[in-house]
Amino acid sequence: MFKKSILLLALSFSINTSLIAEKIAILGGGLSGLTTAYELVKNNIHENNEIVLFEGRDRLGGRVHTHYFDEDQKSFYEEGGTFIDSDHNQMITLAKELKIKLKKTSFVDKDVFVVNEEKFLKTKDAYYIVDMLVDFLNAFKDRNINLVHYNDQTKQLEYVKAEDYFNGLDEVAKKFLETYYFDEVGLDLNNMPAVALFWINEDLKEIKQLLKLKKSTIKRTFLSGLANKFAYRYSVKGGMSQLIDALENTVKDKVTINLNSKIVSIKKEDTLYRVGFENGEDFIADRIIVTLPFSTLRHVDVTDTPLTDLQRLSIQTLPYGQHIKIGIPLEAEKDVAKDLLYYVNLDHRFIGWAGKNAMTFFLGSSKSQEYGQGDVNNLVHDLMPGLQSKYKYVKDFGAPIIKNWVTDQFALGTYSGRSAECNIGIFNPSDTIRDIYVFAEPTIDNRFFLAGEHIMADGSAGHMEGAVRSGKIASGLLMGNLLK
Ligand SMILES: Cc1cc2nc3c(=O)[nH]c(=O)nc-3n(C[C@H](O)[C@H](O)[C@H](O)COP(=O)(O)OP(=O)(O)OC[C@H]3O[C@@H](n4cnc5c(N)ncnc54)[C@H](O)[C@@H]3O)c2cc1C
Image (cartoon, rainbow, N blue to C red; front, side, top):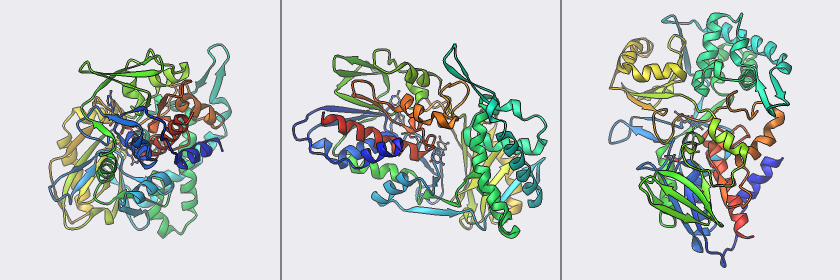
């Protein structure tokens, strides 16, 4: 109820600010920063106020970026954000507003391959593994009472680690769970609190439903159900960067956009905020919306700001996924994605999927770092013959492109996760309301707002949806405070 009312407040704002003249700085030009700018512009805030956006990279979009293999953009892969879940309403609305075409990917009638010990598993064996996981996690759920403990002395929640619960699980099923977890969260199971598995259990509920379907349907859908609890999802036709370009084009004449502006400090001076840049320059703003991921914000000096202790703690400790992505162009005679959906490789612990004449490998956790540093070309060459044998029209493939988000200085990780290390308790349902305060509550002066996927406590964190929702919430709160 609380979350919804904030969102509605943010969405319904349209105000006359004729007497107000302020400098508003948006820090970070990813999806969240751009959405913030878009919302302010939509509400004509630029007419009486100066809006300035600062971005460290030489491009906008942050963790949303499409790599095009050729000039006519027929073959591409997404280096970052890719899929829009069917209930990601704010993303879908934004795309519609910007006249961006979405492509629906249905999970029905697609092939899903599972490889174990270098062999493609028979569907019934993969089916059996998922069935076993459903039973295991259901039994696990009944033990939740002991998984979180509130320590009266430290005033913090203490978690049991997920890894402690895997004894006795079949080796292949364990590999499957690990692969799925690495792929989705990008963190090792031994970094995660055991309560995090409730979230996987939620996904597995969908699979349980699928298991009730006719077997001919199940065999094509159950694994894709595991990767996403919805029956279909969207991607942007022609690549996600189109959405970023459309946002940029909408705001660029009304918002001053400064690229190559690496932020190193934020300080409060009387009622104003001074933003310091790596090149020694600074900018003074009346209000700021900070959309930097906590992974990079923790390297920005925010000592002299009225952030709360809990916000500071989360900025310092919130973990980020350790993924790299590999994209390979395929010489295919048709859109590979029409047939192939997922390629789950239990030996190498990754999930791959087909796109438009391209294949993506999504590698999570420490494994990904191993590949990132090793010879990825060899890895790809080892894997492709298997796929080629299944897909005769995949004739050849080009040099892989690697995107390592962990070493990218403006990301330092893929997307926020929640772990025992960041003792905020997001996996404990009763703590949800507390979390939104911890991350997103404006500072007491109502002039410093946090946005970005990582602040959302409603299940949209880690997703583009979270970036858009948080941008809408922060801009709504800022506009509300402009009136005061
Ligand atoms: C590999 C990968 C796969 C993903 N897959 C999906 C998916 O399928 N579906 C989905 O919904 N989401 C997915 N996501 C997540 C999604 O991309 C992000 O949640 C979303 O893009 C985050 O937007 P943001 O604006 O919050 O953060 P960002 O995009 O990180 O924006 C922050 C901006 O701040 C800038 N910045 C950082 N530090 C500084 C600094 N010191 N000074 C100046 N500028 C700075 C950055 O350059 C960046 O532009 C994926 C992400 C990755 C990396």
